Image 1: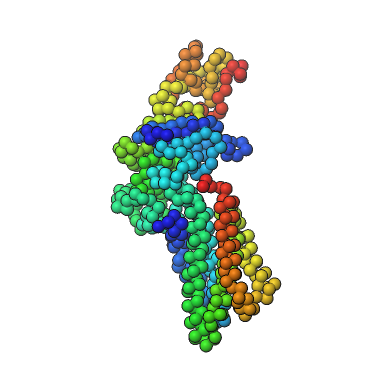
Image 2: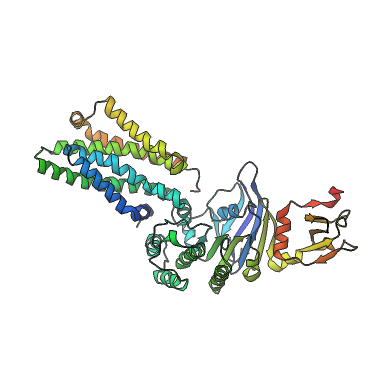
Length: 209
Length: 293
């Protein structure tokens, strides 16, 4: 197992004791979203759930002083940072998988059309929401710790996303008009995420590499 | 680089804040021994440990740990067990979960040994980290360190906050660990009584500098306690009085042994305890009595 994979596993174990609370939040989200258009289920779950769960290891790390543990374990510092992003991607993949299945079920039950294009658009929008949220939050968490800037980090990505939605009048339908640009949006998201990792490593001056 | 030393620091300097820095820190420990790093709160003990462990940068000098330079390969951490003054584990982890979490990181992790140690220490695998007392938490961290077969144990204030029974148990555990000649221990403490039992070497740190390092007996031989009437310690020529404590009844200070011979008159000269050495050196910076005169 690679060092990054071990760090992803450590993040998973860090939040594991709180899985019941996570499932309750997930159930509430599903209950609220099930009455909506199935196309918004995945983006909404990513916005409401993935961002929070991805960042949760930072919350616990601050509380339990896990930065000391990371420094003591035979683990390169870069693997620690990359592992946090890996954990976030894992959360995203899990949310998208469950959310897609849920969307299909809702569409079937409510007899709402939910084709491949709609799904692809929904997933692309989810990816962009995820990228904005993580790319902004993680370098700040890594540089300053969660507790010092938690409010800023929680609301800044949300504000950016809401601003983009409002200013661009973005809906799934209007987003679908960008269909030919969807691959580019995925690549752009990946580039932004990679840039975020680079910034996180560069600003991580608190620690010996 | 040599493997007969558990570690060596040579001329290490590190800026900590505007008012405090490590300066020219040099000391070493041969493999197979216990060293106590003693000094008052804020003397620089934890900073030295963090530099040694590669957990913070240092600006000058060099550090060698188990024959490798620091900072070095992360694989070096396989051989070092660290027990800090806090657990740095998730409070809601059960002790069985601690093993599942840490095992993937260590090549030589011995799960059977971990469970056996917890049993010996009276720790329940189902207990949560947050429910452990301070003494039990220290034992847990020791069990973790011993389960990945560390060759060097580094403790930061391990006995601080422990009751006498727990302290005695802990010192016994360290003694057992040292049965293997390849094992070494460095621990910082301000409870010098611990060193009377297991300390082979002592390093005394004050104000970010090493005041004295050597075997415990060498340190005890290096100083003398002088006691006299209220004004009888003034006017001594060529004698450095360290941490003078004076009241209406009398005065007491620490002096170097070679300078004690220069003191005459009605001055009582005695061998100090480690605690007296630490207290006097920690009380204030050394000063020349001729400068006072």
